[in-house]
Amino acid sequence: MRKLDTELIHQSSSLIASSDMLQRAIEGSSKRAELIADGSSHSILLVKPAFKAYTDGSPVAVGDLVTFVTKKTIAGSSYCLHMSASEELYKERELVMRALKLDHDYILGGQELNFASAEHRPTMFRGIIFQSAAQQDNEGVLKGEDVITLYHKNFSSFLHFDPETHEKPVFYSSKRVNDKARKKCAWMWKVECVQVTAAAHPLKATEDSPIRLKHLITNMYLKQEGSALGLTKEYRDPATLFSMKQFNKYTDPEKILHEDMIFMRGPSGGWLGLAEEDDDDDIRTVPSLFKNVEIAPESDALIVLPVRPIALRNVVQLRRLCLTIIDYKKELEVLPDCQTTSTSDPNCSPHVFEVITECSGGLMNTLRNLIVNLTWGDDPDPMSRGTQ
Amino acid sequence: MSHVSDGQPNKLMQKLLRELGLVQQVASALMLPFQKGLALEELGQPQHKEKMAPLVTLMNLFYRLLKQMAKENLRNAKEVYKHLGSFRKHLGRGVLVTPTVKEIFAGKRELINLINQDLVNHFMSLLEVDKAPQYIDFLMSVCTCPEPLPNVQVCTFKPDFF
Image (cartoon, rainbow over all chains, first blue to last red; front, side, top):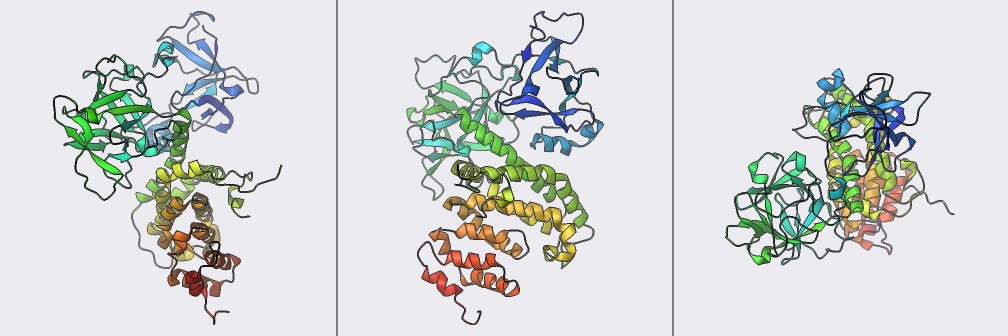
């Protein structure tokens, strides 16, 4: 129904969109939109028809144009959800990257979502179904955008990637299969459907239903590299397309349940399994190998184990904070190297101070947040933490 | 209800931040300004205090973050220890390196056993310049774990110093 009280909840992080009436948005006259954990009175939005041709109370269909207006007024004014058209953001990709706390070559630019005064012409939104409510209630069914771990039952190991220790994904031996115990970042993979319109649909264990697996913390896609697994940022690479097959031939291939056993088939047709020879000294890890045999070896069945929402939320939130630090580091890295003596280089040092000034606001907030939350004390001042 | 300033470490967060490679990122972020044109010698000097103030604030927070990550966590302390050589360049420049270095070793026998004469001499030389309590505090803390450690005690014993 139109003029319905709604909240916009971000599906992946479970955060609620809200307007921050105290913070100015990048677009001058608007208020900043933010995603917060429990919502606030500013999170309640009225869905209104975009055109007066419709009346309040008439039904909304997929594809209808609507506006979102805050129910609560501030100083007598309502604010509507608004997409900016800022020249500054068009020109300065770095501003967008910093706001997103993301850096990916595919992000060419962006505009800001904020709350603008409802007296101006509001932005019209067209709703498209990402996932139907019926599918959302389908508990225990593996869907696109789910974050999972893949467990090799025979070798008792998780599909693991840690760029610090291994260049390629490996199988990491661990008995931590308990629901609460499997929260290692290196094991988390996001399943992505190839078609955007089927983004969060239930996945099928058939050859004609390809998927991609994205490593959650590095944002890299799993790919077949020769006879082993590799990773790439290029999601359009055909080598990133995998398909699944149920281990149990009597199981319905039209859906995959959590904790189902499956086989993974690479884009070149081989079945994902363990290599017989280990090329490093780490006894906990075994490299992957695609086996070009007609029938999948039963010993290479993988169990699809979901990640608990709380574990996932912790990782996603911390990763976003870490990206602020990485952004600062990257900004410094692009500056040319300078040889200094006992005094700062007069040509180079202004650029360094410029980066420090640009990044310090967000960076300090992030560092304070991390420091205060790393211990269970009461002191809100990060600098007096750990000084008793 | 009693007020706890710092409290016990949040082990899960320490682990996740280690897995996200934060120690490496912070170590790079601490070193980069000096590779890109700033002079290390100007850090902590009164005449450059105003100019360096934003960087000093950031470095204080970075070092405090590393300290909290290493608190009562041997694996994290080992990760931070890998960058000790770089961090030592910032000692004595007022950016809270000493509490972080102290935390790396505090109660971690495996790491205390890696302390050598060179590190102890570094702190001794800092004490000769500035009789600041944090340097004494560091030397005191690494001599016990919690029982006395003769190897480190021998390193810190310098009869002509006092």
